[in-house]
Image 1 (tube, rainbow, N blue to C red):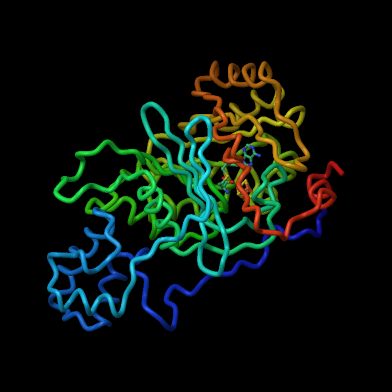
Image 2: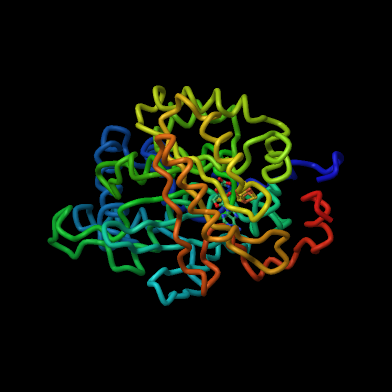
Length: 393
Ligand code: SAH
Ligand code: SF4
């Protein structure tokens, strides 16, 4: 990447409260919901109780129509319907892979699109959600990073992805069915879709608080993993204010190579990143950090890289997730050979770290890691631009 190229670009953030029209209740925190209800005329003394009731309808039962909130008076329901809506983003396309992976193309306000992916496995179901349209961080192996236009998702658009997937999977309880009676189809959430979640901190935090709330979607914080490219100043805050599991896109074992692969490394180099990661488990009371490592042929996949990696992370409770590079049109890299990946995994494993190789899922529908990018976003970098940024051109 040339020295003059910007690491970040301007990001559009939608004001949390739109000046006109009904307010969408999806994405408001409990406190935000309380304020909205009071502002709309709910007596302060009743507000807490109303928040609890409405919260359960929205997040425990999946109700979108105030008329169905039968524990509220008819008059109050009508009042709510006048001032508020309960809306999740619209699914404009759904692809189902041969392996059962589902990819949703989701339209959000302003006509932008993001992708959400559901990955069923034997013992769990993982929903991979997006936090931004595109990404300002031009990691050279990532398809999302080639998309020029970027906007932060609102908290409602982030938690809305969980809700629309629950709609599609028919996961909300039937009337009369208690919590915990149905098997959980979405048992885990990973913030590994489009965008850098720590560049949209407040919205991601508020959405994940909603996902963890025991009176609603009720996912344990240990079943939520946030993946960051290494926004060092926000890592401690993630531990304190979200407390979820952390994954970090490591990918390189020297600053020279990591600068090229994950350009944010120029701002916060490996040593600073490792300091922040060392402090994370204690701050968040979580066991271990996942190091994501994309396997790029002849770039970062040597035995020496593997040995440097285990040396660097010494003392950090960690798991190393090896991700075979997923190709996309115009990509300037190739996937490492299978024997190379296994050899790398073996070195890491022998040093005492779990080193699972991530099986690519949903490749036939371009749903695999780093392949996400809405086809409708026309503003696309050319091959020449990508090559220049990787320093390979
Ligand atoms: N922006 C965040 C989260 C989204 S990316 C981050 O970078 O951590 C989720 C994971 O997929 C990251 O580890 C990312 O580096 C990796 N990834 C991106 N492009 C990829 C590709 N083409 N093949 C394999 N993994 C990729
Ligand atoms: Fe952004 Fe993550 Fe892709 Fe890097 S790997 S460009 S941070 S989405």
